[in-house]
Length: 296
Ligand SMILES: NC(=O)c1ccc[n+]([C@@H]2O[C@H](COP(=O)([O-])OP(=O)(O)OC[C@H]3O[C@@H](n4cnc5c(N)ncnc54)[C@H](OP(=O)(O)O)[C@@H]3O)[C@@H](O)[C@H]2O)c1
Image (cartoon, rainbow, N blue to C red; front, side, top):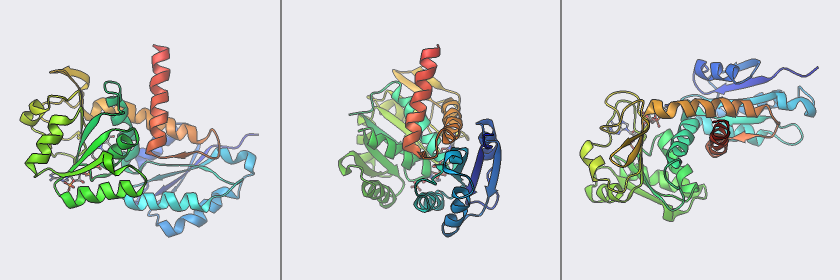
């Protein structure tokens, strides 16, 4: 008899996310084991509990999901969980703290329908947040040049340093401060894509700045709370054409984000060796689009 598909939810918040639980069930998990308030140093024993209870041939039916609103702690939990595993007892694992990985992947894939990423230039507003940082990381991996904007040059430079430390080429990552008019104007003039990844309810790009962005081909705004992140872009925009651009609002990206989240959970149960982060979600998202294109 085949074993039930169990998803072990390791969440850094006091209450494990209901949203992540519902998506997990919809994606095919049959039982959820939820652990909340997880600290990185607790992970090893929990993961060992998952590894040793079923034989290697059944371990693809056990998987780990790391979530919670503290993305820094979540990443440490994820790393510790991976470090605790070894062959042949591994279980598949994914991380999507606060939806930051699936949202970033969906935003970049949406833009890539209209702009070839390699050799392009992108401006990421609010690049210091979990979503913005991942958008910047994915873009740099795809060989785009990326301006990372923050209110503080120190913070945007820290993000660049962090990405460079992860192996991304320094030449493709440029830290700027939104208060520095010269650099902001330069980034706005040069970019083919802009991603507004600021906090909810914060406008980061004015109508005037949008008009100055003459090379802009795609504008993506992930802020769903008014005032929206880019003046003139609608919440439900999905490849909406305006002034030579394709515009996406938070809900316009949200459909693909949900599909990526669900498909990522489902793929955890295909083998016991999957490690799904924002980069792997790019592959999953592209597969979804390819299948949809064949079906249509
Ligand atoms: N559609 C979805 O499923 C989904 C999922 C997750 C997130 N989101 C949305 O994506 C966006 C980014 O999420 P996140 O969690 O990365 O955001 P976040 O951490 O809350 O904020 C991102 C950045 O916004 C900047 N910011 C904060 N307050 C500001 C202010 N008063 N004025 C100007 N800038 C300010 C900060 O950068 P500096 O301090 O460095 O300037 C911060 O690092 C949010 O709007 C969120 O709601 C959507």
